[in-house]
Image (cartoon, rainbow, N blue to C red; front, side, top):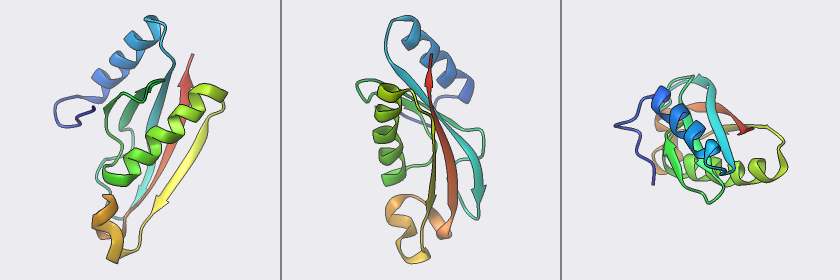
Length: 111
């Protein structure tokens, strides 16, 4: 599965394009906005293919899993969606948003 530490956002977009050229259904998730503490800055990308394989990172923990699941629906429907995640401080570490951070993520199909 994906690994944020060794891929740049440009690499992630290149991987998504190569998957698309190979005939795979692909979605791109992009961090649009962050508030408070967030693991990844605005502009970060996650590429997801129709089988649920992904590269890159938009957050971590449960948030990333939810984005991958949503991306599969976006690939099937073609309808882009904006997802927002906000977490109370006491549960922040468990789902990957430290210090109660919030993020907004755009998920769109790559055509």
